Structures are given as C-alpha cells and as structure tokens.
Amino acid sequence: MVVEISLTSNDLILGVRGKDHPFPVYLAAGVPVVLSTDDAGVSRIDLTNEYFRAVRDYGLGYAQLKAIARNSLSYSFLADNQKRDQLERFEHRSAEFEHAVASRQSPFSKAVALIKAAVIAPP
Image (cartoon, rainbow, N blue to C red; front, side, top):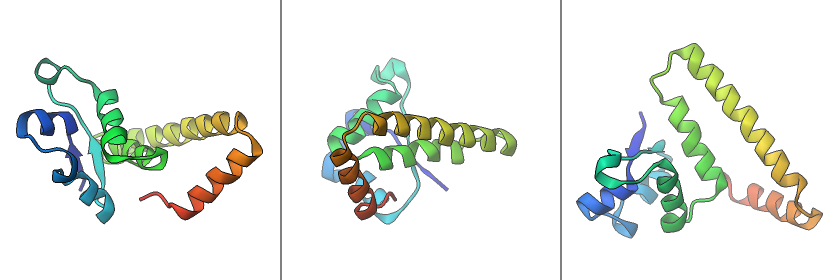
C-alpha cells in the first residue's frame, strides 16, 4: 500500500501544510508515499511543482525524491512485466544521471557526498 500526497491541493483546498501535514510523519515512519497533483484546471500546477514543494517545504534530498519517484512505478497499475521494465529503465537512467553529476564534482565534493550517503540513509 502507498499513500498518495497532493501537497498543493492539500494546502489550497484543505489548508493543510507545513508541520500540520502528515507527509513528514509518513516519511519518518517509512510509509511508502508518492506525489500527485489535482486536476490542472483546479490548481494550475504540475508534478514538477509538487517535487519542488517537497524540497522547499520539507527539505527532501535527492535520495528521498528518488525513492518517491521509484514508488510511483513500484505501486503503479502497470502489468508486472511493464513495471519491471520501467523500474529497470528508471534505475539505469538514475545511475547515468548520478554518474554524470559525480563526474563533474571535485574529489572533495565526492568524499563529502559519500559520507553524507553513508550517514543519512534513504528511507
């Protein structure tokens, strides 16, 4: 089971945001979550906005964002073979992205990132 979170909709329609929103509690408890949007005609936002808001309002880092994106495939309604293919594609593309970013970093930055990754494990 996964919990679908629409941060902007929850804020604009329900007035639930920041420390009053259960989003950080779900993350801390290890509950699988995905980000979603409401009807574009209602909120005029897209999924990129929801990821931005998760970073801005809740301080999510790359590992948490990646886990949420992975959840959107893992808990999707795709057929098992399609889901497997898309998860493999996701992992491959993520590895390519991470390699490209790492290749542009200084050795010191790489060491700091490695230490952070070891100390701050993704959910």
